Length: 255
Image 1: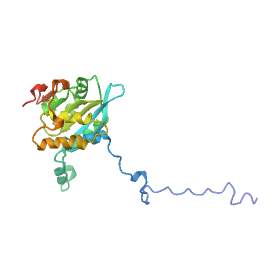
Image 2: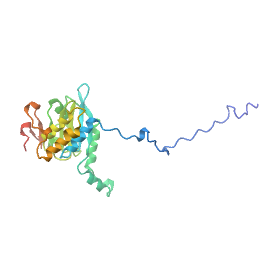
Image 3: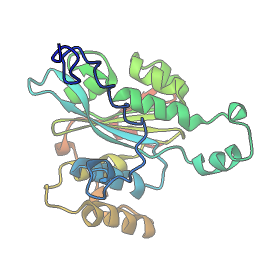
Image 4: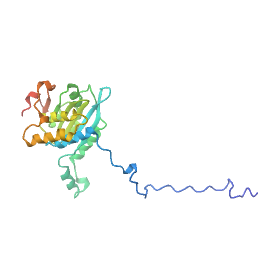
């Protein structure tokens, strides 16, 4: 009988469960915690792309390197850098004194287009502009709404709908470099040469000194830099420019 009423009997009510932990911890995150670590540094390719964008006098909103797959059948997102539009700073200042719902920012469209691109891919044998540039080894330059809409490529049409006015595709080892700008940028062989010099540079080369500084010296001198040397027929296929809907070959780059 004593065993039946013993406090240690199995019929005793169970202890209440401990309260759940709070959703937000009141304890500070340790400095060496993974949550407190700084973001990883940019890759070597991303760093070179940043150097290219910031070394140019024209304003490029973003750059993407479309990398070929291991079986060379698909171009997918390899790396990139989003810089934003030229007047982002002015629009951000306006947004501080205006209701959010009343502010329209073209950079939002361009940034959305860039972010969505992270999941895009192109078949190497397709008629898209990145695939055509890769297959032909010839850069493609699309400037103006008409050129972007009549190129026959969904990529260029979508870019134009998101505020991009100039789209350039430069083939390189292992993929294609895409440059997008919200400005109307005229064709520029020096940019193509500079981009190729940067992408083909050795891994241990410093892009800041080997590409950017030499380009800036050339701009200050009012002429071409050492990386913007004159091209010859032996350097590769002709350049395919499309400006305002008019197709021009490499030998007719003049306005």
